[in-house]
Length: 123
Image (tube, rainbow, N blue to C red):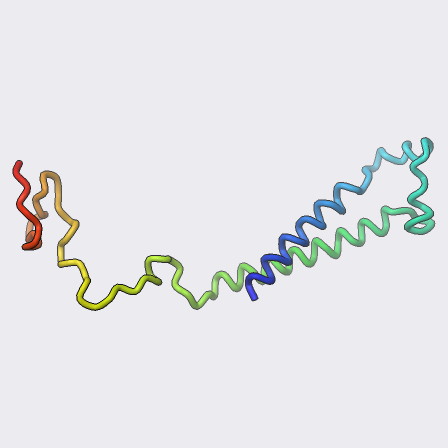
């Protein structure tokens, strides 16, 4: 489900970028005098601005709703958040208590002992 929503999010984002880029600004009306008035025949008498602005609004609403749904799914995920929590260690291979907690010089902090299988490090 999450993969489908992610693919939809990317497709809507690309479509939204494309629709926004093909719209003309407020100062582009002067260009109609030089031959760009053909859009009125394709999109109707009002031109492309009405169609493109409505399409932009619909795509923006879909993008926002999809973003909210994806964030909800990510917040309520059943899986552990870290990949280290997903690793299953076989029984009997747990590290010894205090292993890897040596201080500088190879000595264990006060109150902790070194594991028996590690050699003593000379200073």
